[in-house]
Image (cartoon, rainbow, N blue to C red; front, top):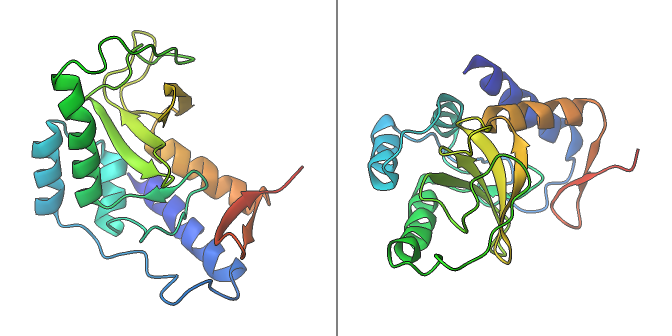
Length: 191
């Protein structure tokens, strides 16, 4: 998806222009591209094809080295996507989430975890942002959702991962974020 690639280029340019003192060495090394073979291996593992905007992202870089390039967490590399998916799939298969209450807002199926969710961003504390390949009836396949470890799925963040990235690139350009050197990540600017 060309728009997603352009958005990533704008995000990378913003970081280079606005982070004068990288918080650690290799800060601008966002990981090498994933091969089509790696992408296909993950797709086989999670039993689901990645949407084109997500495939394009991984073809540019396979994770962001836990840098929190996006505001919600770091982009997991494909190996971590597979491991995380398996970590949630096993309890689903064993019925451990059957009695768990989930009350998401918006068009997300009301279950604690869905094997058709692809974990993509992680905050390091158990919360994820996922691509939802099995939305509720009024949802959109590929919508980008938030999952919180204490409450389950929360709400839809964007109609797709690509739209989330594009919105963030626009927000950076419009001054809605600044880089917090102490945190080593972007933070929202009060408007």
